Image (cartoon, rainbow, N blue to C red; front, side, top):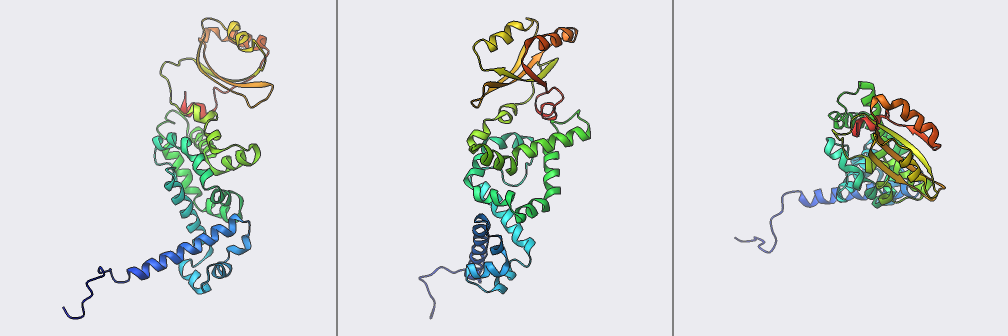
Length: 286
């Protein structure tokens, strides 16, 4: 056919234009991330972003009509980057995704550290998080609903709040800045070890935290002081160079031996805290 171009594939009308629009939009978000990551909050305005990208302010407003749409784009970018790394994007969908999240979540936070830091440390990030407050709460409550059967509504709410706190960016940022922990190290803390489910055999179980002195014989003293009628159903130890070790212990003590158990705690001489009524314990292990 006269005038036909056979050396180029047919493109849908407007496809090149749409690609250019998408590219411009991503460039604006790139500059938003760059400005906030550098702490240049004043550079996160529509006018400043237009200069950084090299487009008119009308162009920026065309893609992002107001500040909220800019912040929503940043939130979308964070979730997209988490998904690329195989991490949890958005909010937990069910109990399975809730249990699986700690293994990869913090390591993925490390990978996109500037984005997570923006979300946690800037007024813009706070605005983003507050804009989805209701959705986040509902997601954690729904994902933990089956595990929380038997709890009161208020206890379920408290347990869901603890889960959200432990898995959130603020926990990651605090442990990163205060303790210089990496995401891998964070995933190995107590919560990662605890999210393993319940045991039907762990009847009459009590949960306690102890501080064991870091000296020879401390553990044997604990074991030898116990009654042979008590069973250790859970044991988790960690130490970060202190002169004591943090021990989390589950003990099955028959109700008729509670008086002897209280006497054991008093004579042992180690600092302890009972966590049997801890909401996270009720949710995952009890």
